[in-house]
Length: 517
Image (cartoon, rainbow, N blue to C red; front, top):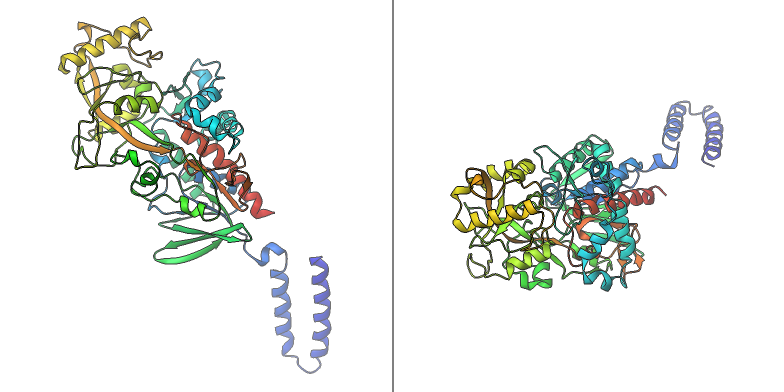
């Protein structure tokens, strides 16, 4: 069609040139110029206008995964991030990414792992069955767990990230949380490798300090975003992947609204407002907004114990054998129970440290033996450098702490923890008795912290947010912590990075198809 139109126009212009040449020879060159320019610009419909990009809101792992898949599908990507540097909370992730049936599990001697779905549902608790009427959680959790092997392989093979170390975290029945053997924590290793590849792609553009303030909507279809950068307002048209994270850092906003009982707890999140209102304005339904995860171990910095922002003490520290002691240096819990139960055990004790009228902290000791210290050396290097952990000889501990170490060492030797029911002891190798007194252990102070919000936008397995739990919002996709329902009451450690990859990839691929159709 376009070819025939072009030939017809060329023929007509040729006749005009012939007539004009009799009286206006100087006009011939102008007409020829018009003809040449027309041929260059009319070659195809795509050449007449720039393609709509896939707009990715947020630069954590969900946004990065979406951006990469959209680029692979042939779309241009414009990423908008309100922070000065990309990475979001994902870059801080310290324990790893879950995967079942991976080659790394098999190399570690774990031949079979059919329990990931069951572990996820059990951790989700009562909310899983309550939310089934609103969202097809069975399909979502299946997509998460069944897609975990491919997600781990994608990160390892596509980006060259080492994920060869496999550990067990709280709530898991087998080791399935993957991280590398190097010095970089898994979140930083994954995010930095992905950023490097994205920055090398000419179809990718990142705008930092760009705050998205609203979605553009026409006939109930999302057509783009409005954002503010350098005090200037900009409108950008395209398909939108919204991956702006959760609200655990929104202490005086959404967190105060949905969980006022958590007021005063420190957090692993930066103090910033949630972006959920932007989705709410276009009719997206939200689920499980009262479901907020309190992580049992945020480091108390001895240099500034009352500061609200806390570095996370990675769950891998306990997974590799670490134990927890009360302010009286007594062991009190199965350290590998779910985060919810371990946090509850701590918070049932009187909080012992206060800063003003609203701050709540507890005085809990995290202790690792030499085997656990060696297994988590990549983490400990940073923690030691920050002054969050230190080494002590067992003989330098209090008598109560020495007794707790001996009793636990005896349980490890027997393979049975009669006191608290722990069944996996990680890499602990310290023996009980006088033989351990000159051995060095790693110790630090920790307290519960707000960490993750399980609640967020209802969505389906195509990563589309839903109106009234059923109808997808056209032109819009969501992934990562902004979504809700899939984790129920409590998220398994290691499943945050996993959901970012699984549903981020889906969102990017689907959005790319949309802008190209």
